[in-house]
Structure formats: C-alpha cells, structure tokens
Length: 249
Image 1 (tube, rainbow, N blue to C red):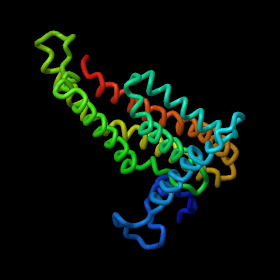
Image 2 (image 1 turned 90 degrees about the horizontal axis):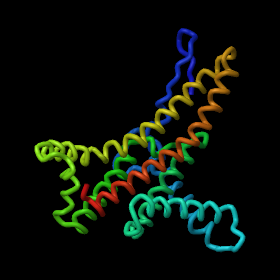
Image 3 (image 1 turned 90 degrees about the vertical axis):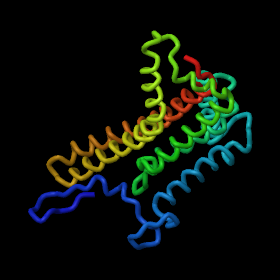
Image 4 (image 1 turned 60 degrees about the horizontal axis):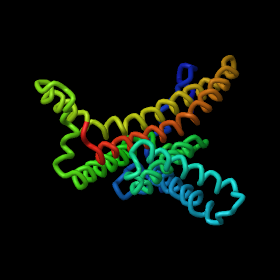
C-alpha cells in the first residue's frame, strides 16, 4: 500500500490495486489466462446465483434475509423498467435485472479487503455497455424498421435545423456506449484510488488519526457510489430501451 522511499519518505501506489495478474503466476496475460479479474467475476456470478436462486428458493411467507434482499431487488428493478421504459419493456426485465445484480454485486465485492473491483476496468464495463447498445439498436430496428431512424430526426425543431440536429443526435447515439462504460469504471476507480492514498498516509503517525477518519468517510461514500453507479447504469439502459421501443421525438 505504501513503501518506504530511498529518501526516508513514503511512496504510495494507488493504481496497483487495478493491475490484472494471472492467478497461477507468471507475468504474461493471454485471452485464455485465468486472472484476478476472472476470479472476482466468477465470485460475482456465484453470489448473485446464491442470492436470487438459492436465497429465494424457499419462498417462505416470512422471508429470510436473503429472500428479503432478493425480493427488494426484484421489485426495485421491475418498477424501474415499468416506470422508465413502459410496460412493453417488461419482456426485457430478466436482462436488465441481470445487469443490475451483476454490477451492484461486483461493486460491493470490490469493497472487501484484498478484493478486486472488476467494474473499475473499462474492458469489463465497455462489454456491458456495448451489449446494451447492440441490444437496443437491434430491438429498435426489429420493432420499428426504418421508423427507428426517427429517433435522430427532431420534428419539433425548425426544418433548416433538423439536418444539423440529426448529425448531433447520431453522434450522441454512438457515443452512448463510451459514456455508459466510462462513467461506471471511472467513478469506482477514482474512489478506490483515493481510499488507498489515505491508507498510505496512515503509516505516518502524526496524521494517522485523520487518515483513518478519512478512510472511514470515503468507505461510507463508496458504499453509496457502489449502489448509485449500478442504478445509473441500469436506468440509462431503460432510457435507451425506451428510445428503441418508442423512437419518435
């Protein structure tokens, strides 16, 4: 976390926690190499399965803690999809629920000591965002045909401005997966890096109490960010799905 420098100072390396490393030694990472990212993504999937499948298997009248969390998550995402994208979007609820649970679980697991935050890597969030982008685009054309292009034609604007606005709308549409992925990864990476910087200063006796207080405050903030960023990613997915189902301005 913090190393003694040659001059007697302290070197802090906040980005070391984001390095992808092979699980079984070595330095080379191929596409098939099991890494710490692979491990923590697998653990994320396992936790989601245990919570949603095993935890709610009993379907008791008086729910257990696991069943209560599963039911709250189900109701929360279901209501979000219905309110934002409409009732005809509920057929995509399983996909959106899977996205939300994977992201929020990965974010929370990343707050455990010695863990790895998979959603802090753009390589992971970009795949999620690209999957959403491709899905809503295909849905838009399958459901609406060429009328999906009305999404880029602002009929309420004056006619001379419509071609200019169409270009802006088109660029904005193709930038969606970039902003969608960077927002999630950037917020998580920034928060974790700040926590590690404060943790590095904890080695200095004079500022240790302030550093520990700052770490505690940042950790509480990161818990909130872990949920909020999963929520933002999911609700943007619902907004994009609404555009695909109802493309006209």
